[in-house]
Image 1 (cartoon, one colour):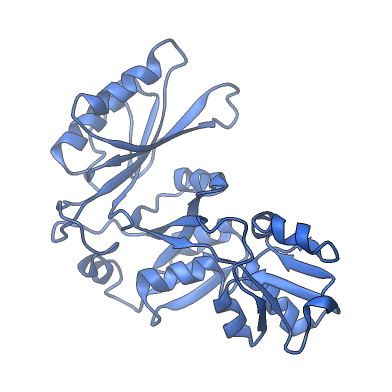
Image 2 (cartoon, rainbow, N blue to C red):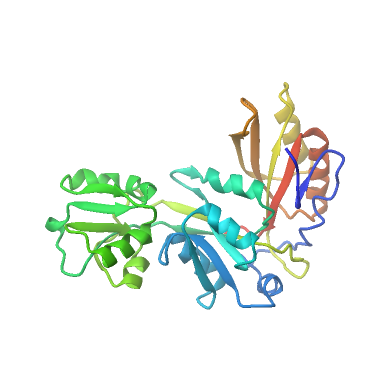
Length: 317
């Protein structure tokens, strides 16, 4: 695999050059000076997958505020393309859900594109049954939503066997479709915010199976702005692959253990076009410009076949 901006290979020691200095005390998820330096030339604009009212758009507002220009996209690929082309200043992507695990497609895009992670936040995912005003529960025969949202509401469908789940490309998009097309006997499952945006009615709230349903989101930028004026706790996400031989993964973990660096996540993913070889995604505490992290990454570069720093950012509170 070929490493690009933000990546490092064996005998390469430039992995931290593009991450900027980082402080050590916890504060908000994205420092104000970082946001202003990233987009001082123009108003903040943010791409996300789905329609206005989707959970990604809620996360975007949490990151950048209501003044940011929202740019809904039909797919995650288009989100990355919009940021890469300069159409927007930021992008927000879901990366992990507490019930369904990682969003592997977005990890693939983080490898493909050189768009550093600059912020992290999490949202509790609460689903509502949304209808056209005047619709009663006994009238509903089908409920549209994203397949993941439908799966998170299985107990609701078990209790209401007369309502059939119907897959749609987006939660908020299903509400928009409901209002625009007015399909008979239909509802949508989405956030309360989506109902407000499109003028629909909420028939039932909190229909998800598990109240401990959270999704973690990343804020991406195109520019690798310096973070030297920021203070706070930091996290760094990396991806690497190892030679297929005994003890290879153990030796990579030693790079962090020897420097007392905590790993908050490790996950493997099959490598494209290389059967039975794997890419590892790891989150570590600290910033890529902290000396212990720099030394760990330099050590890691010597024993891996691929290494890319995906970004340093403040962890979600």
